[in-house]
Length: 96
Image 1 (cartoon, rainbow, N blue to C red):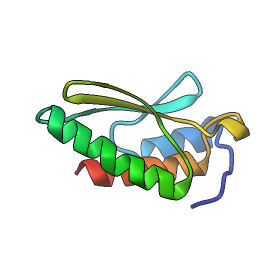
Image 2 (image 1 turned 135 degrees about the vertical axis):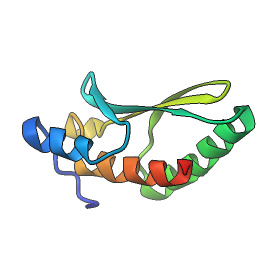
Image 3 (image 1 turned 30 degrees about the vertical axis):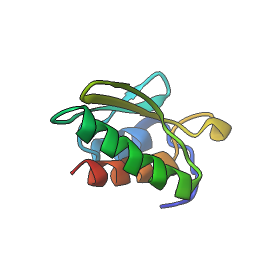
Image 4 (image 1 turned 90 degrees about the vertical axis):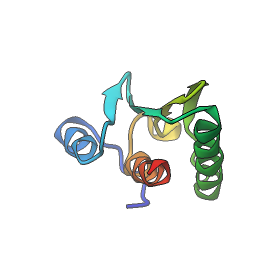
């Protein structure tokens, strides 16, 4: 699924519906990850950063203590694409 097909309407709802805990917010998909502590959250962010860099697809994120909020969108496509869904799946695997 590594193409950049823009997802809208029912296709977007279906793709996000297959993800655990992700939702559509302001033209992006979002998930709030919670970890045991800051070190675990930072470890997730480090692993996620390496994954994102390999894909050249970088998340928007916000971290406070043990929480990490991730927003994904494909800016040059103008919304959520299959690329974002693929990265969301990988982030879920990293988070365990």
